Every structure is written in C-alpha cells, then in structure tokens.
Length: 220
Picture (cartoon, rainbow, N blue to C red):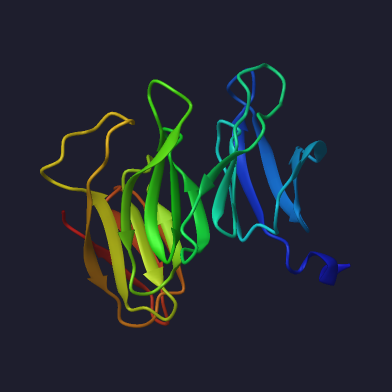
C-alpha cells in the first residue's frame, strides 16, 4: 500500500552498461533498518544498517552511502564485472551532527549536509576516509544541488531566501584527493523562499524554484 512506503528513503544512479551506451538504473531504498539495491527492477542485495537511514546517495560507479545516527555508512562496489559490494565502511560523526542529504561527486568523494556541510574523501594511497572540508551552518541545509562535475554546490535552508553557492577558494590550487580542500561561498538573494534547486548550463548558473521564479548567477 502507499502508506507502507510513505517513510522510505530512496536514491538512484544511472550506471553505464558494458557497452557504455545503454544505462541501467541502480535504485537504493530503505526498508526499516535494511538497505535494498535493485537494478532494472532486479533485486541485487540487501544491506543491514544499525538504524534507519535518514539519507541515501547512489553514485554512477555503483557506490551507495547512507546516513544513520552518529555515522555515515559507505557501501563501495567491488571492482568486478558483477554487482557486488564491500562490507560497509563506517565513518563516525559527532553526536550533535545530523545529516539530511548526501551527494557523491564525480571523483567519488561524498558531500554530507545537514547541520554542517562536509566533504569526505578517500586517501589516494589507502582505504581510509577523512573530512577534507567542513563548515558549520547556522541553519540546516534542506535544499541541495551539485553542478554536473561536482565542483560547485548550492545550498539553502528551510524557508531561506539566501542561497549559498560553494566553490573552490580562488587562492587554492586543485588539490589531490588526499589533501584538505578549501571552499568559499557567496550569497544569491532570492525574492522569496527557495523550494528547490537545480543547475543548468553554463555551470555557474543555478536555477531556483521560489514563490516567484528567479534565475541568478553567482560570480566567484
């Protein structure tokens, strides 16, 4: 019934098939404390979780991330022709930090947003993960959108008229994935509360849906 699925979270990603032309849709859904992965309607795996995830994200590479109280769980796809995943990697979070949105980047780093905006990256020379950028937010981010290549991030709080656009700091060189990253943000004032976000070309333009439509650019 519809009520049975009302509280479920889901995430999807388009995976390139073997011929790199057709796309297969990977769908991750929560069922209580379990995470179910399906591909083109076919069940692939059921992943246990210690608690009901509050957010999910699926990457084109097949990786899946889930946010649970005090931790992020990463289900990394194995480098095999078949669909299989490694045991989950648990990334601890502070007790007072909650996550409402997850986004994978094109280089398989992970944005985690809620009471803070944080970027998790994997070490270039090993399996360990660490926070390579973090910034606390005065209000929880509930509207989030990343540009196609993941270099820019737009965030807004509930009933927020100030849109933040996060970008690599001008003085920072393009870092290796193992180095800390430096981001800055600028504001774009909206005529009314933001209700949704999406990026369009060129990459430095973000479209917002407010009580009145408004397109603005944020120069960095």
